[in-house]
Image (cartoon, rainbow, N blue to C red):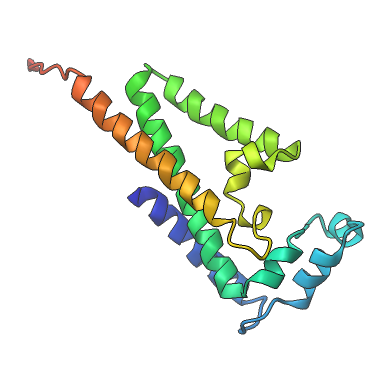
Length: 172
């Protein structure tokens, strides 16, 4: 959980540092982002290979609020993936734990690309998908917290069942 927080914080700090040279200080959305959000035909997005389809998020939140929610969602997704990796490593041998986590992430990506955002954990980690002026995006927070708690409980159960072998090493 701490690693997920440190990773998210480092990404946020570097993003702020890099983008501060190209932005401006203020509590308002920039006109280029607003233009991207209004670009339903994707003319601008195709030209510059960038999109921002979350107009509802721009209407519902200020820039600092959107930043905080994005930080929270990324942190929760990374903490969930870390807890899943830990539990999968306890359950399976070798590389199977990593394959499990990659499978969950890839499945979430494919479901999100196919438009099934409600059933994609990765899509749940993108706040723009669920911010619509209501507080429904907190359902994603509750989902990730519940999954993390379940995985933490499972890990404590599995750790108690694992026998640690104490071997002595012989030098020489």
